Amino acid sequence: TTRADRAAVERAIELVGLADRAKDSVSALSGGQHQRVLIARALASEPELLIMDEPMAGVDLASQEILAATLREQVAGGTSVLLVLHELGPLEPLIDRAVVLRDGCVVHDGPPPEALGQHALPGHDHVHPHAAGEPLRTGLLS
Image (cartoon, rainbow, N blue to C red; front, side, top):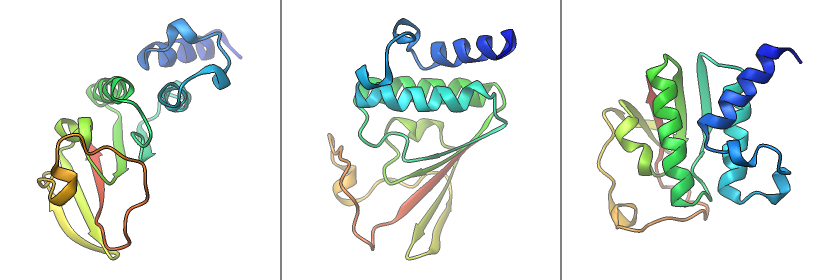
């Protein structure tokens, strides 16, 4: 690896808030920290487009907030981010376009719609699979 590669890795680890754990084994990290390592790996390549599938699934609130701040910084730096989500959570303020799919069809394309039903209730946080009829939201941060 080159000095530039090492610098990019160090920047990515710092961005996701894990500089103090850089020498630790991934197996010693929490689920949220592990997810942040995976995101740091993607950020180290300094992508123009970052595609993420359910990046908040199984991640504690503190890690969700760090990930949201990290993505906010990436978008401010010119990176486009495409997310696949069931719930927008802390990422909602960052999303400027949402495409909602139901049964393979686009049912909404525009600003993020308000959450309905059980997903709108405070504290609704889970990792269980959704019913086949539930909409899947795709968010675009640009």
